[in-house]
Length: 336
Image 1 (cartoon, rainbow, N blue to C red):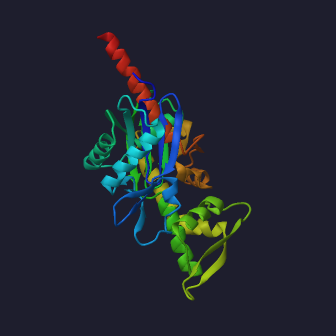
Image 2: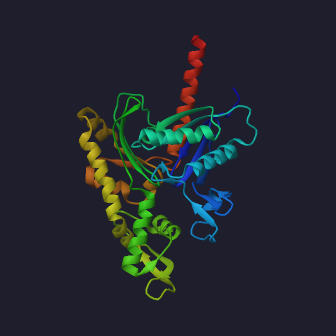
């Protein structure tokens, strides 16, 4: 079998990561596609297209083909997967790759089928679907095959998946459509209401990354934000503080904490005891938001920590899963 034909893809609402067997995560790009409306030709994919968000002329549209972890534009998604697979593997494909790709834990059969078909259309030989929390747990370095409860909170761009995993499968899980993108939208709404300032998605994301917090900081942080004044219609600069972001994000983070609590309420007692011992592990880009650990810890009383590399955990887990499948195949062929 040609080397590097097994790949794991973390198909996220905000970014796509590709893991190639033997090489690790080789590609991390935003899941944005820009195409020309008149000719229907794709202009740019990934980082290049992200820079165009909110800055395009009339005939060019920059879109995110995935919304809340689910495919919303099928043909564009297919082209995007194809482009990323080719970019990760290079043009020289002797054999179609075997791809494992992850889906949020709450998706319906129809949505799973859509992901599967888009991946086949992008040139896969085999497609294996893996649930995001399971992939995140593997990527965070947890041995999920043991009969021991682990709780994973994976906060991505479109969905937050919360699951209790034992013996390689999920015992209790929930997927809520509140995550990184909603944090950005909450900041946009807050700025409009409080400062009469209209800002774009990218600016909101900047605020979230630089000074965003969900728990009062010891030292207040400030940042200058530029946008359009809604009263005069002219550009304007406003100073925003970190405590304002805490206020803006309170509702969203509250929903995530509520979901964590509801999963804990449904967990069998033996596994609850394990979780109390081992703590809760946060993964995904959304877990980089400051103060989330403290907030969850305060509300649940359980030690909470963020995985080592939260952004790539799902992609690494997806890739390791495919390696594990490959090993399994080898064993089977030997037995024959």
